[in-house]
Amino acid sequence: MRLRRLAPLALGLIVVLSTAAPAAAASTVVRHVIRTSSWSTPATDPTGLELVNGQLLVVDSEVDETRFDKGKNLWRVTRRGSVLQSLSTLRFSDEPTDIAADPAAHIWYISDDGSFGGIGGKVFVKLLGPDNKYGTADDGRRSFSTGAFGSHDPEGLAFGDNTLWISDGTTGNVYRVQAGPNGKIEGAGTDDVITVFDLSGLGVEDLEGIEFSHGRLFVLAAEPNADILELDPSNGALKRAFDLSTAGLRHPSDVVFGASSTNPSRRSFYVSDRGIDNNGHPNQNDGKIVEVQTVATPPNLIRNGSFEKDRNGDGRPDSWTVNSHFSRTTLARKEGTHSGRHRSVTSATYSVRQDVNDVVAGETYHFEGYTKIPSTNDTFTYRVRMVWFGSNGTKISTSNMVLITSPKLHWTKSIRNVVAPAGTVRAKVVMSITGLNSTIYVDAFSLTVVS
Image (cartoon, rainbow, N blue to C red; front, side, top):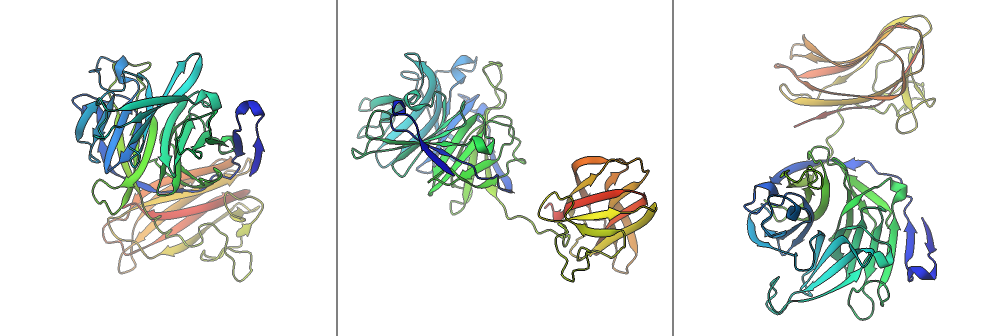
């Protein structure tokens, strides 16, 4: 991690360059889907979320440009998606990109990525009056420019620890605006301390969502099924990622983290999805909010699927049957320090296998594995199969998972779901080689229960 200060023109802005390597993503599962498109006053493109006092706040920067416009672009809803109130920011902002709340101070922060006096980006600070209700006569309002400290496209907002967190959709940076001695967040040229996390080292672009909750900082890019990234709030370093590949997101726009909609003792991520952008498709109404929870990574039923272990030092991967043509190597690897290597110069035909005992009839099993095969003119066949057996040891059937007959110059991932047939009590995973007169590298094999 490197730290440098910008020139004085940057108003004391501190830039932190985040160079941490990406982490393996934790699995998530969808718990509930809120169709914002189905509300009587729909949110066609929900761009921002906040979770406060057990309720969701939702803003939409595009609905006013569609035929579905009813003069409302801010909603207060339950965590299950029932609309409690439809509101508007149009008196001061027709482009609200996100909303964050400081409930203790009765403040709502609303970002806008429009141009103000030729400078892009502003945050409106909505001061709720004594009635603690939005939009009533006792409200106050002020604002500050985000472009003044470099965020010309403030897409995401979050509040926590007397700090406003801003994610920028153009630069992919995160801005941390900490209140100074006067206790107010007022932006550049004040006593606020402003820090920017440069996330370019993480390959993050179009950073639209950000959340700070329970001392944890999360960001989300506007890419289909993009991972939620958890960052270290002190320096922006990547801590972990959460996989959203099962959520079916087309254009994720924001994320909040808090009490589940079904069990408040558990926590969920709520992720807004704009679907097809109303900018180019004003008649599209497909907005939604997806609630997901992390799940424990299922155990790998293939032992030594990474081919890393060789306790007796014989050069052969543990847990697999021994064959003179199969060894453990460091010459190529997808993960870790070793892979498995099939090698022959005699057009060998053979198989390598291991028993899989923890299988249940009717269950679906998910296989993943990588293969790399250097250029060769050899005619060969490489297969990976699951062979299913009944209680009396009789073979029931075989499920094919990998079939390769030509070189793969780069690591190639094979994915397959297979179902254990009726009567199954155990299985074998088998690598079969036919007519090999070259080299095949294998790595990162896994077999997990889908359900």
